[in-house]
Image 1 (cartoon, rainbow, N blue to C red):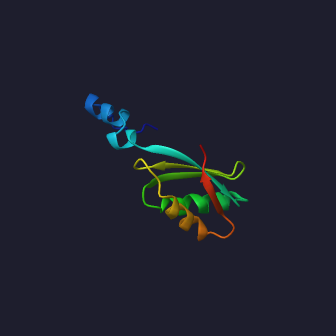
Image 2 (cartoon, rainbow, N blue to C red):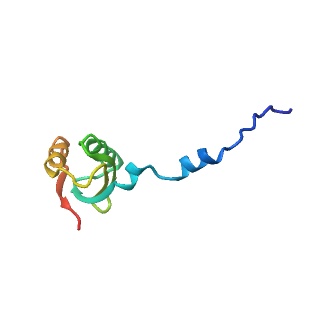
Image 3 (cartoon, rainbow, N blue to C red):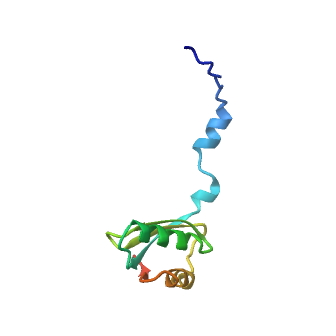
Length: 100
């Protein structure tokens, strides 16, 4: 059985667009936070989801084994009060500061 597969021609300018990072991404900063109280995968997901709702947070990845959350910011700084408020809504999760 033969399948008809449409071949696509790659244009150099399209490849360049996909390979080069947008200027916005180059300006992003990553910050590591200490957050205690995560006991399972669901806790990690809830913490990440809550932090991704904070203005200025692009992405959050939680790690319960080390009590850490890595966040990628859209700007240069993070509003620690907004992080505290977001985590206060989650039962048993405590923000303990930025890891230097």
